[in-house]
Image (tube, rainbow, N blue to C red; front, side, top):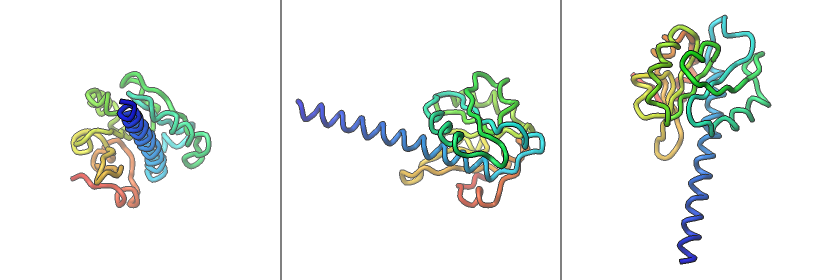
Length: 168
């Protein structure tokens, strides 16, 4: 009995550690997305704002990056987003898997506004977001939908698309 409890505790610790590691990588990817996208002129002053809609477990990782890094001459700010009307001042909106049923509300509001929608749900880059996190052979990667990104009013670097998984 005691061995079973220890084994279950160890598995839970490993699962928690893997989840935390994924959040760290997602935050680092997001920072690199920000650096490898050409933002509209209207988005090149003030703070660079990353919004999170849904599970806030990535926020500490994003805040760690924001304390040390910037995007061009802009400081990074991380903001919790409560509704689609809150996205106008964002550069990146991350819609977590637990709130993916609400992403359509954001997609319409983001068109042409220089807001990149990043999701974490299989198939979403094909139909909804500009960038979507996926797992390939157990490794975190991302899909890039260049058409969706163009519709949101940004230009993506060749490096970002080359490192991502293309969506046609």
